[in-house]
Length: 93
Image 1 (cartoon, rainbow, N blue to C red):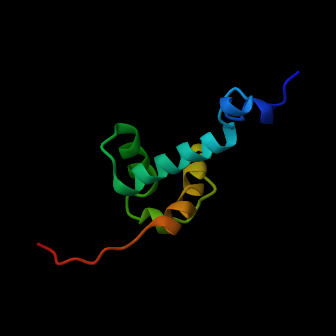
Image 2 (image 1 turned 60 degrees about the vertical axis):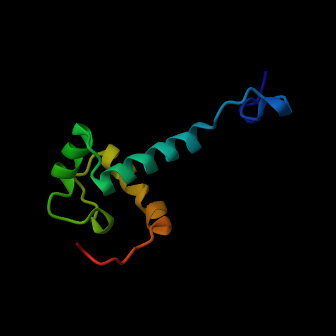
């Protein structure tokens, strides 16, 4: 029997090169949170924005008891986004 940690090691170190599911799931959460933040041209992203943040800023959205579990997981991705965001002040035109 092979441990999951061994399977997730790089092939060069004797593993199978698989990714850990927790890290992959978080990466997808962050990616979707970024798409919601920028308003990516996607029907699903548009639907999420209209359902949950139609009149609220995504980064300041307050969680509600009626939020779906999918939306709650997307909200978890905001914290990493907040750490990496840089505001650029520029002259409008």
